[in-house]
Length: 109
Image (cartoon, rainbow, N blue to C red; front, side, top):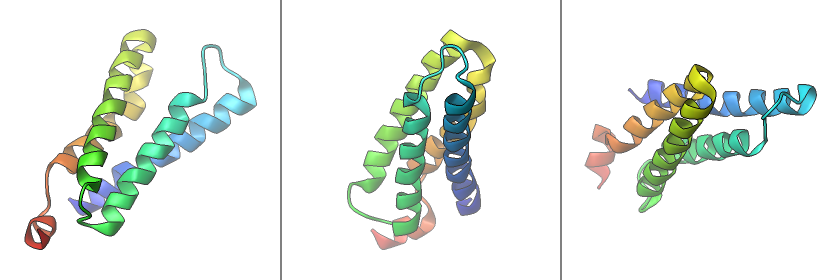
């Protein structure tokens, strides 16, 4: 389960970087840099959570960030259609992995 958590975090980071490069190079219509920057920030927070294990408040902060970005993706899905699902699926995975505590985290607390 930890590997899937890392995979989702790295996918969100890669999607943010790729989307930022696409936006800067080809300037697609209605594309802005705020969403990929938010994905990169979210991925960095989740990688920080994964790398540091149990840090007081970090898990709750990541849950809040994941739910906020997931709400943004729901709005983007309504606006742009199914292309928003590409990033929404790993973000949903990160949200679920942040909420579900691993047995290692339970043993430490």
